[in-house]
Length: 81
Image (cartoon, rainbow, N blue to C red; front, side, top):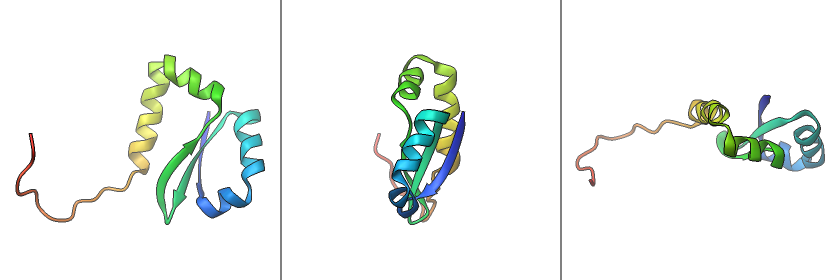
């Protein structure tokens, strides 16, 4: 399983090629807008596999956490419980 990162404008301009890559090569795409990951494109078969396979779920969650921006500005004054 390959996961690729792509800018939203590049994804828009190459949508057909991305769909083919996703379907034929089982590739996942993380689409970024303004350098921030926004969505994941994956095949229905891959999605179905993720729904039942906890190991694959953990792998994808790790990829998402690695790509997510970390915002640490300011200091927590009060946190709702």
